[in-house]
Image 1 (tube, rainbow, N blue to C red):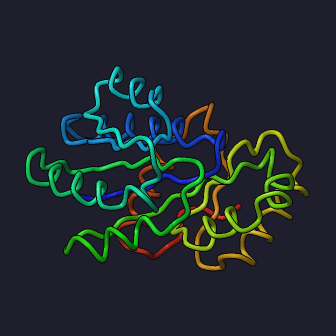
Image 2: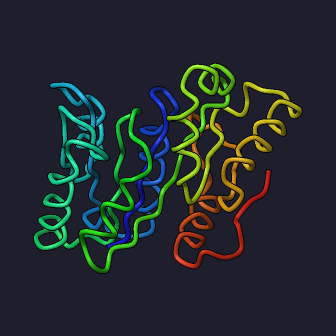
Length: 207
């Protein structure tokens, strides 16, 4: 069971990117081999309903953050999913306030699972978020395995280059890829991201 964790601040494009990846995986393998865990703080999980309507098995963890108060529930859910559903792919969308300790919780609690963290950096609000929430955004970036610079179509080349440099100063090891999640990613893009998650070598894209 390969785990991908999607993190990023509210409105960064996590749901859109996750659904796009799930659609690509569905073309590559049986859709029943894909399970989604949704973590949304509140009583109603709209994103989870959307994904369930798209045909994926969805597990909701609400009223808390899986990197904090719901970490025990996450571990229990993962154990149940692995034993009962036996998926090939598990996609986790964390709440927008989650920081990247989720992967560490999984590694320390369940032997044999090695999650891959994908962070959505909101290019359109990068300066605003770094000014108002520097600790949260920096922590998400710092612990990421891969960074999507989303909404790249809203910025100039110079602005994007500056954001890439700032992300590189926070995490020099995570590859960055500029995307516009609303337009969808290519099959080649997702294939290279998955290959990179498996091998940890040959960064799929630069710039």
